[in-house]
Image (cartoon, rainbow over all chains, first blue to last red; front, side):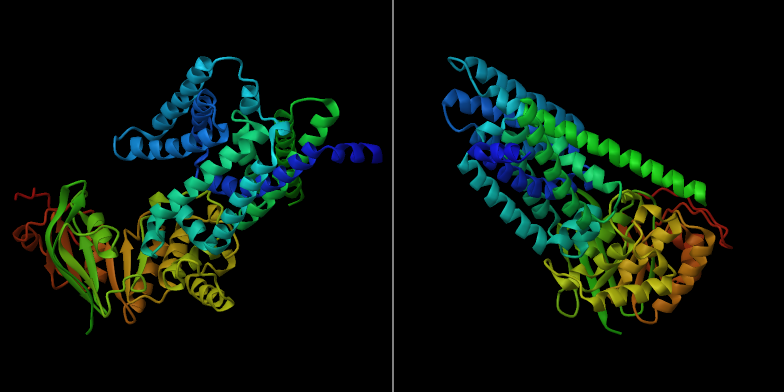
Length: 278
Length: 249
């Protein structure tokens, strides 16, 4: 056991992975609680997948794929707003269109890129090995800025999510805040791609708040406990994937799903016991 | 009595389409104004206009004494737009009515919670304070939103269809409470129900693209017709008339 722990921490990439997991779990707790409460999960899925278009173009141009993904994530977030608001396309249809458009653009440019794109798979499914120190600094910056925003404006965020038109009468700049939060959402998604990959990312945002929501209906508790649940999933996933030599992203998601099932079963049984006692 | 707000020759609508034309209107302290009119006639647009949610395309809306509107109103919107599974407690919903006074980054002090509890006591929902709103009945939810509207101690209480989805018992209590509150604040109440309006309000505004103000709470069908106020009345009380004239411009 001791030798396992020593082994595990003796590689710099596992230390990087742990620090990144912790920071991403903190960011994902805030963003996840927000998108689940406001029912923006499908929109988040669209943004996540559309960002692959940016990855493809970045490969083709030979620039940092995370930069390409960030540009596409933000563009697709505003694209949904434009299609739905100005062009009167129904929102779920807009999301569906941009979701597949981004994937199509990505595949198109990856195909055009001469030679083999070696870490393409890591973008689809995540790869802990590819997390560099500069990635960690970017995630750190985002997490700190977002945490400050959530602490200062917690009440305004809660009220505008619950009842935007009432919040507006209370002087909350609902549109501005929604855009800022959408920006945070897009950036959190992009910076989490390295950890779990585009295809698996939605679960990292939605499973922890869904688990916590089983036990509490308080928004602040959902944010804080989601961070802990997400980090537990990441930690478990990293250890299991290191031990069994399986992909880390998929392992993290599977562990979160197992926690979700346990939470639901536990809840079901405890409600059943309470009822049979009464 | 001091004027709270006035609307001067205002027109308003969405995407270039005018819903309300040339509206003149004013509210003073202790007014109790019933707002009636057909669906699609502009009642909601009118509320958004005076709440400052939309700007008039011509004319103006002025707030007194100093143009600051956020601390003026308590607002009870229609319940239909609420997501009942949203993770928020009854107490937090009530406290959200203070955000306009607290400012954007405001946190609550224990005094705010005491105020909230006092108002919730009066509305009979204090024992639900820490429950999620998903566990409330229609009447309890409406009480919660009424507390949210009242916690800021507003000069003007604006109610949009407060009697939809509530039981008779709550409706009676609500109107008794409104009479009491009217001694401290002005009230604007939108309702479909002319029977209720005429028994509880002091004056009536009829909205159908234009606004016609009736400075009493007695309206006959002849008066309504002469004011061009075609409204569809569902009278539960002793007000036996239905008027279905079309409005011709």
